[in-house]
Image 1 (spheres, rainbow, N blue to C red):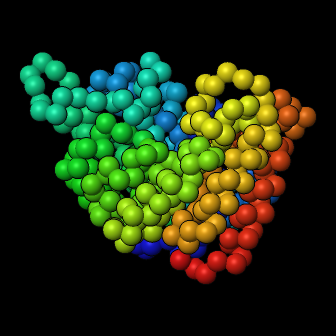
Image 2: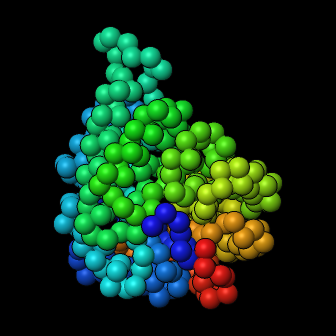
Image 3: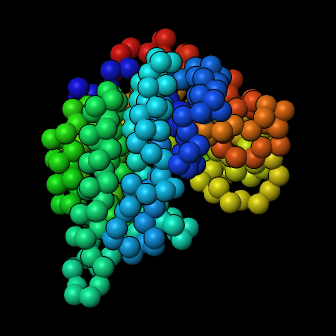
Length: 320
């Protein structure tokens, strides 16, 4: 399979999970509620492995706190039991709290300094491990990386990595570039689908979609937003990527963002879906939803907006 065959009405599940927090009743209920509340037909099962710092070259994906392979397989089976298609999305993060976009090394390998070659060797082992798991468990899509902005320029290494993934995985392959980076990735041709993080200000969607459309048209590839969303927090619709914004909970702010995003994308047939951010494996109580100021839409007005939009797109749109 090389192309998307239906609209991706997706939600990202489980990202903040740590070993031991999946494969239990709370996680099972969470995924069931995600499906029923949003009407999703896809999910991105997302989890992270930690390298120590942005200049570390070893990614110990086999170690805690990364969820175990058994937990990952459980999540995939649970999603499939709910008739959800699955994108497996392993993510590298930094244990010191630095955002993964800042993982970076000298352009040329220098003796006694950490090197891109060393990092890609470890990153390739990490990604291939989960590519094999994705193939064995029947995941329809696999994401080879997420928001690695400084690494995006290393086109040769990415092409080699993608070629290695294709040796063990037969489904759709994508890479989740960061917001504003769609036209900075030079190796989209090596992938099946272009995807990016759609954290654009509510008033800026039309301009950003014009820019992204030029990239999609030039490559002739399907496109969807592998991430997109907004905290339910006052002020977040203007800076939806800022998860640390200090303000009060505001579910209507989140709803306004979704209405703006869907309103703009509805007119662009080339936007073939979303994997909205995000839905945790352990949900807050329903009566706490109004006071929850994070990205999750559970118990908030945005969930109904998403369900209505996904119902419209999946029932009225032609196959892709």
